Amino acid sequence: MESLKSVHLAKAKFSKPKFFFLYSRSFHESEHNTSQKLNSINMKQLFTLLFGFTPFLLLAQVNPDLAAALQARLDAELVSNDAVGYGAAVILPDGSRWEGVSGVSTIGVDLTTEYTFGIGSITKSFTAAVLTELEEEGTLSLDDPISMYLDSIPNINMDATIRQCLNHTAGNYDYRANPDLFTSGLTDSRKVWEPVELIETFVNAPNFAPGASWSYSNTNYVLAGMVIKSVTGNEYYDEYKKRFFDPLDLLAANAAPFQMKVNPLANLWFDVLGTGVIDINLLSISTDGLFSIGGAAGGIVATPAETAKWMRSLVKAEATSQVVIDEMLATTPPLTYGLGIYEESFQGMTRIGHGGNIIYASEAFHIPDLDITIAVCTNDGSKPLMTPIYTAMMEAYQEFLNPSSTNDFSLSGNVVAFPNPFDESLNLEIDLAKAEKVQVQLMDTYGKPIKILLDESLPFGKSRKAFNLENQLAAGTYLIRVQTESGSTFKKVIKY
Image (spheres, rainbow, N blue to C red):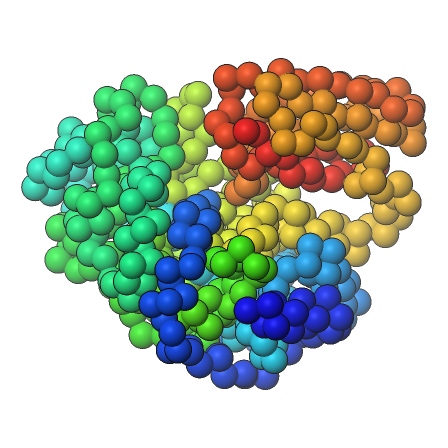
């Protein structure tokens, strides 16, 4: 495996990233020594990251200078992060679209814009939209308990409403948190899990009574998919196709592994053997089981361009009605998560959308202030942080609009986080080229804000700030975003 790793590293580090429009065939899976290799795999590592070419109308052409700037930033992010592959799309105010890729699908096969990626929990926006449309049609009420549509299931809060499932106040245990999922998912990676089987096998007792608190749970959306079938008689993914995929011409989008694949799927890379990032297809690990585990919570694959088109069409009430999107964005304080979608302050503006992580990672958000929509995806499961890539695309667009706003001061080299990993207290040293206001925000790896740690003016030079986070965070990986008028940066920190 070392030789394969060396080949990949040479490809990723020394080959110039390319931007292609031509079709390339996906690498054929190897079937050699499957059982021996699976026994060597670090199963928990692989599944820890489970769940966060489409024809368009011919519109105005994207300015070549903007297209070049966006591609250059995407290429630079790939190299600086030593990632395998990225895909991105930006839809502009006039409806024109730029899309680009950088890196490879597998060894010797460059990504093209035809490749699809797993979009993970962005799938939740489709599931929530179906149910909200069903309410608008008078078929159900989101305030109906799920017991009206589903037979009793062990360890499930059957009194929870559909709405509580969609906004994660149902209290159901997240099956992703069950360590047995890691082992079962790899014992037979080709096993296609049925929704009820997934819940009955991996869901433990509820975390709290319905409405008593908030906790992100993929279980809620698997249940939501089951409600869709109970009410319509159709599988949730057939409703996706009828209501959204077909009307929006999302021809490559599909709910894997249940629907026909039209476009090639970018091969998935991860450090499953502890020897370096590797294409898991070379270990004969199928993605069928992975996507069936995602289900109505995270099983859709799509191109970045389709993902951006979906999010823009949804938020702008083109994919559905204004009533539906208003309902999906409505929250009850202190909740900030709506129904499969959320709105947040980002870089001084509002963005609306969702992130996803099913080893593949993605983000798709619409920015009303700029009237642009950005989607970014990766097939590199070891580099799942998509918010910096999203930010790079947004900044490239802003710099194109207003070159004079570009500042030579780069914040990235002027912020130090220590100790890292940390336990109770995290320190930041921020070195400013001038006195200015600084905001420090703690985020999860999907880019969703958790807490504002600092929002005040700091003097020229170095300032050191300490933040006591004892008993406030679970162990894991987080992002720290430091924002000033002169620039911004992200720092990855680990809590143990």
